Length: 117
Image (cartoon, rainbow, N blue to C red; front, top):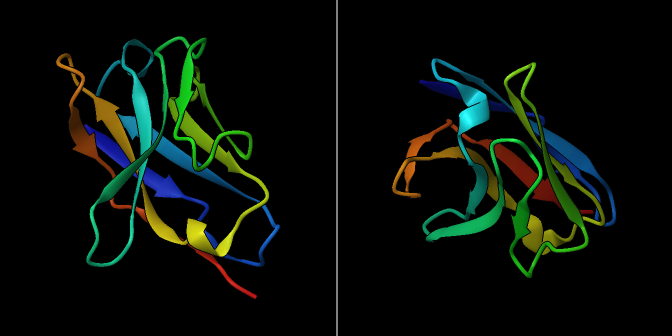
């Protein structure tokens, strides 16, 4: 199993970024996938989940209405569209696979998002 995130960077407050996560080594469409974020020295913060078929999504209150999770099962790719970014969205963002017991069983290496003027 391999998960590779991309798309992070430096953006001004109010700006947008789209993160991608390329998945391989498993049947992507049969797993819930998640985005999780972490600040240096801090705990993990769950951001969003999406079902295998993409028809069900969940969001943390802190990002609801600003972030959109999606997936393209034909491309084995997970996305996170982030709009109206705020400085408090500055984190290392990871994509993660939800295992059969719904815990995170595989993670990517992360992509840094920095929101600053």
